[in-house]
Length: 447
Image 1 (spheres, rainbow, N blue to C red):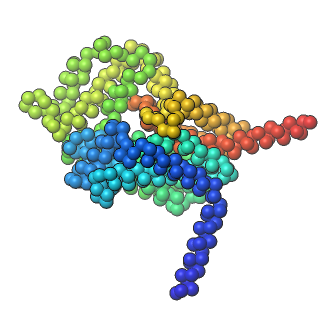
Image 2: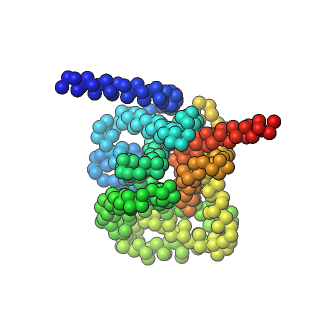
Image 3: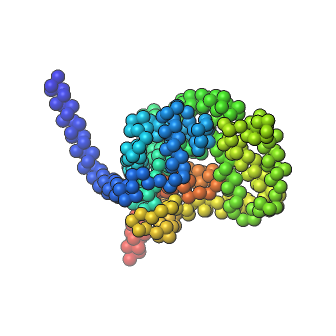
């Protein structure tokens, strides 16, 4: 028995040393990323908050730990958000209490998830190009906006971690078919779905990619059924719970009304409020449609106020969109198809300042980042290498950009998708160097 234990111990030590040696540069980068995030945590303060959604998430988690009820913005049951953040924070409340230790533990976890994103970017890039390219993909996470974001208890950091894991394991499945990488991909997808409902369509992008790389179709069909079963295990009880509370079918969330309404004030030639009759087309419609949620005095019952308010926002958004279409449908299409996606792609989520880095500098870096992504795609087509994975990552990124743009173009939403751009840059770095070498070889041959 002692001999077996010693043999196992020797093997583990050997594997660990080999891992450290093979990934030395990446581990150094992770250490530096950790140091900067911990410095920022100390500088901003352990309980630093925007006093916005982050504070609401903390309160929701505390309420869940106390009562077992998922709430948001008040003490009544809610389906405005997916339950992931509430449950996760609630678990930490049970472990660490409701005070300062809760904030510290959550922020350390958020920082570790930020590092996990960096590692998965590195691993994704290294599937196709040399390891130094993986380091290139990690470097953008030194930006002040991402250091700051990892110090906020918002969905962006954990969602980006889950999304990057989805992409990485999808790429691994494309190279090595089977259930080995399917399971972590499925776990990452469900985790992401528990945080943001917009990721629901990700399996469609993954399905198309796997078919393009000639993944075994019978195996893929089995995995689709398994994933559907896993998702239904959540959706069915969640929908039943929501029907009991709100008397409506809510398979994911009912919170899209407000961002959709805000999105009708973005773009060109959208209707102004003074041109529209909200009393007739919003207030009266809402009262008729949701009459059962009002009391005898014509007031919304307290437990339904948030739900009805957001449904009213959805009615108002639909009314504004119809008015926009009727007055200038071309400008509306241009706004939703071009202006709002462009706003998202160029946006930087950075509402404070760390390390004295101004927003304007980060916006310039964001533009350079975009140009590098475009250059990476061009290099892939010129060299005819790695086109399929690059197109998959690009499609997943742009697909989510357009999903968000159908509601509200917001810098926070783009921030959680940026890891896909960093994967493009990392793979593109290897392709651009190969393209440069080809050009130099061509010039040398002509001489």
